[in-house]
Length: 347
Image (cartoon, rainbow, N blue to C red; front, top):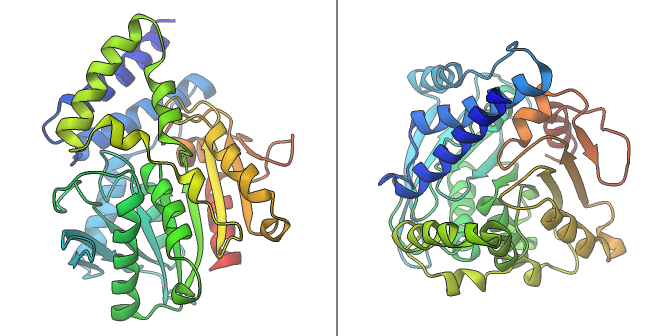
């Protein structure tokens, strides 16, 4: 019981820090380490062992090693929408194989930065794919602007894709987004996917939201908790996102879903996600599945124990935790197996 209370206390501390920290839009290694410690504690609670703990420092050394070898390139992309500067990083793999001329672009979540998806980026690099990750507007080292939870960010993503195509001429491109980044991918699929971007083969969306107003109601809850949560939210929206609650409540990826999917879409969600309920991915999957032409283009996997941002980790470290939407039995895949198999088949 004491261990569970300590685990809960760490999560509360992490969320309060994200609101009150002046660098909430630019997390550092300490912030990432705190998140991973929470995940390690959860793995220990479920499995009863410290074996195979996730070591953030090891991944940091790996990326630093690639930089020393000259395999990392940093550059700026100017957005067409408002001429904002986006800080972008491209990393080439050590492995030489048939995947070297294929690029996966990563789009992080709210109050994260380009390194937040380090675990999945590492998996892609280990398979020989080039990786592009960037600080979205109003995050990290990119220019400051109002955050629109995916609407304008989708236009920025198109600028990144255009820049990558013109400079590197990749054979194929894949997209991976988490939370707000996943919503960005859905908006992008509606606005830009098609013949003009034929190089883009798929979008993998981890923990997307379908309607922000629904997630807001879920987050605020009811009773006395509503008031202190509303105070934190108001501060976050105004001081960190440079927006208003009224504007954000109108953001709705569900309403812009294309009738015919121009690319393949993989939805991933944790069944214990306290930020964006798994039902959001289920509703997106259900709506798109109404069209029989989308049947072979969309998939949904759920992770039994995963909270927000934990899908890749618990999907690897907890056996039999993944489940395909259409099956009651657990999937044979780990997250690594699912991710790499999907890349192999579709990129």
